[in-house]
Image (cartoon, rainbow, N blue to C red; front, side, top):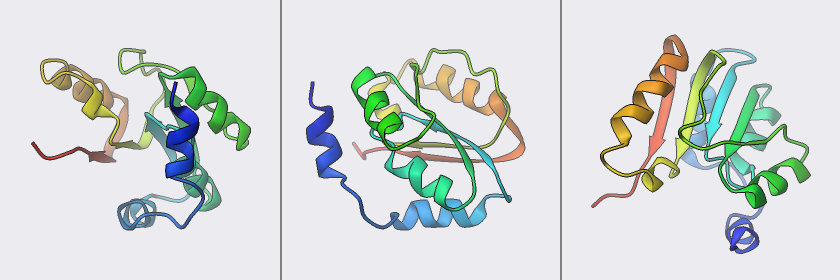
Amino acid sequence: ARAGDYARLFAEGPPSVPLLAFIAALPPSARVLDLGCGPGGDSAHMAAAGHRPDPVDAAPQMVALACARGLPAREGSFDTPLTEVYDAAWASFSLLHATRAELPRHLAAIHAALKPGGLFHIGLKEG
């Protein structure tokens, strides 16, 4: 219901410092799972850097906003099976919506979808 408000809050701008470091650590043309992509800003920065993001969000409104940016966003939850193999996964303040009890299962699924040595970023709130 508040997808537009969220998108405006994180309007166009330069990539964050953590995202810049993540992008710099990726192999060339990396396939990156963007789990909880929101309106697609981080995926857009990854694509602009020559990578191949797979933006996924549970909210159809967020998927629509990401698609409007020209991203191949798709609807999916943390429980949607990950059938691809990724060079990296970016979960920036998305997994905080999972319960503590569900988190080990979600992390195991992400780990299984990563290539050996794959890069993983998770952003969470403290407390």
